[in-house]
Image (cartoon, rainbow, N blue to C red):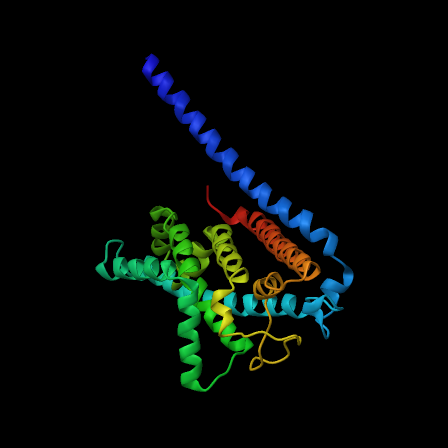
Length: 283
């Protein structure tokens, strides 16, 4: 009995230490970004594109990178969602649970999830050369969509697999087809979890630099065309930190603060959306 209590106490202590470590690392990262980024933050930073000599400490801001990141992430998320949801519904509604094809598809998604983002960037760059497309907003959208597709699909798959079999059987018993059951029952039942899956993928995409380095390029201009280069916040941070000027390096932390704020805003919106539609979930 004493051994069990000791083992339980040790397990609780280890879990508490793990939680404290995670929270401490998170607070340290956010604190560093805030402390170093707030002094360099200004209205001009978020309302103006870079001007001549911006990376030498001159005037201007990062509006081009903010809009570029939002455009690429929104386009990539929509594109990845249009691939992920049909794949997930097919795996769970049209294939047997232990089908070799379903197992192979999930294994392929796991492998794609583990591929480094720079590989997706290189692959996207080769495809763009094949079709004669230069570094552009469209190239960045495609590369980021390829990057977040397996993340979104596997997260959605795990959510959809939690739907009780009795719920889908009841839908079939009322004469609904597999497609109707998938869209009107499964999707509504798992909507909060699906939103979370999209959020996870979106957060991964908006913060990635390697996949857009060769595909989206970088420019000081605001993106106005799918076939022109587009700046992103991760690359703006990278270029600013690479300069020898302390003032420009401080702006990198301000850019990181903006990126963090965008992710927090997306997270808050997704939580509100998920909470609003959680009433459709059968508990």
